[in-house]
Amino acid sequence: MAERRILNGNAAIAEAIRQINPDVVAAYPITPSTAIVEYIAKFVADGLMTTEFVTPESEHSAMSMCIGSSAAGARVFTATASQGLALMFEMLYIASSLRLPIVAGIANRALSAPINIHGDHSDTMGARDSGWIQIYSENSQEAYDNVIQAFRIGEHRDVSTPVMVGMDGFILSHAVQDMLVEEDDKVKAFVRERNPLYSILDVDNPITVGPIDFTDYYFEHKRSQFVGMENAPEVILEVAEEFKKEFGREYGFFELYKMDDAEVAIVLLGSTAGTAKEVVDELREKGRKVGLVKIRVYRPFPAKELADVLSNLKAVAALDRAASPGAVGGPLFTDLRASLYEYEKRPIIVDYIYGLGGRDIAPKHIAEVYERLEKIAATGERGELIGYINLRE
Amino acid sequence: MRKMGWKELPPGAINPWAGNFMEVKTGSFRGGLKPVFHEEHCIHCLFCWVFCPDNAIIVKEGKMVGINYDYCKGCGICTVECPTSPKSLTMEKEELQL
Ligand code: SF4
Ligand code: SF4
Image (spheres, rainbow over the protein chains, first blue to last red):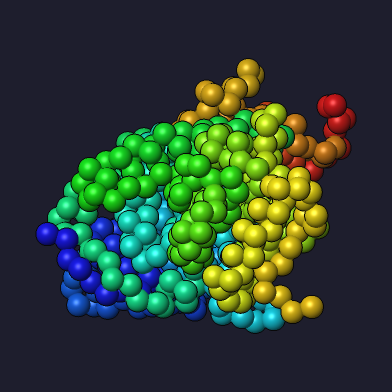
């Protein structure tokens, strides 16, 4: 029987890793993801895991160790946040181009300066072109479920691509939630064994990993790398289906909340979905046709599936918890707007930057966004393209 | 040499063809200087063979017998390491093969 536990996001992810018992965990502690690594260190010390737990001198080294171990055929996990992920940047690209299905748990946090330890999506959004699959979580339960599924998705031979699972720093990493922890045996059975594409320890089939390419082959190798990402959507849905059969909880590329007859919608990712659902419920009681789309899988971006849902709406707001200075808007907004370009009939779409450095987003702020969307829907007039929520002038 | 298309490549940019660098004729790297072997001074210590960073010193039955210019990059390391006096290997001018 699954067990009801009160866990914060860090503990939830660590529980999943205890059950999965990967061959190698190499990680460097950084707020707010430190506790994931501390829990794992304790599990290993207490003999609850047989994982080779390595404590390198930096996140760059942590990811390098993950790469070496994964190339040897090991199942590998790491956890980090913010500056730590930024320090891994160089190695992130190497992991994905070598097609190594490392899983990383990220407690999303702002990037300096000014120094700030609180939650926003700047860290993982900065890595959105690194070739990693990106999955975001709304709460501890989802963080736990997503990490379990991440191993199956990334390690699928057609995918063979690393996966980062995001959860909002502090809001999720440090806030406890009543959630279900599945049975150890069931989780172990679900994730199976890794069956790697290649291994540097296979002496009968000697290979060189990471050789140099000049202008004659680099482009071809890059193109062949993208196949993993292209195969991911099908596998993500397959794994979700199996997860639902085994554990009963349903996942997809995104979650639709009261979207059936919605005329306006907010699209976002992460913990703010919880707040937004409350607001949708309240407004729905007043007869207002508002809905919410919570994106779970951000890379690969489910462009067609999202556009199918959104194209018939009148107005849509993307809520970006990361900025992209000099771009058309935040990263979610630009992806969303580009996805809708294929459709002749499409909603007016606006962008909001919110929550940078952990700035609070309250129900009233979300209600204001819906109000504006309804006004846009009624008048057809968009107004400002990019707005900022809860920011002092 | 025919170049492979992206669909033919092994995943992860690995190279599964052990030893295939023999196909790359690094002799084209030489930039106007090549080592020349003077057999009469050679004591067959094989320092040149040990230090040559490529596959360019030809050894037969334990003896240095010459240089394979298909692979010799013209780095000159062998001429520096050669212990005889006068040197059994010296760098000399050659026409650039463009
Ligand atoms: S010049 Fe360099 S590459 Fe050529 S034979 Fe001497 S050591 Fe080898
Ligand atoms: S280093 Fe000089 S002496 Fe020794 S084998 Fe080579 S050419 Fe002969």
